[in-house]
Length: 134
Image (cartoon, rainbow, N blue to C red; front, side, top):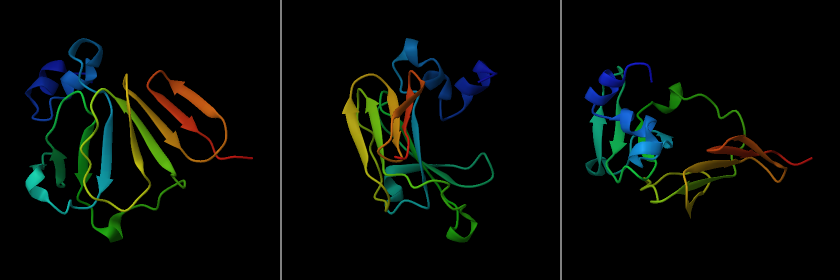
């Protein structure tokens, strides 16, 4: 974030998430492709030129949003994702989706991306990747 005033004026309030150590807001976000089945549980953010459906929720939970991209315009996934382990004080409120499981682990903010049974690679304090096995 390079402009705190602009971030504070934006309806997404990413300034709170950027200052997560002070605000308690989660620095994590989970993006899903497609339009949610129940858009009544989301609000539409369209300032970027394409629809983004944002789920309201506790700021301590990861931000959950859906990129309303037609299937023909979606890129293929680069890797086979097995699971996401989302560590947060509050569980994210996820839309219905077809994909790998998202498991909530109560605790400090952290995201573990599980691609296989290999070693856990610590990228930052808040991000780890379990690599594909040998």
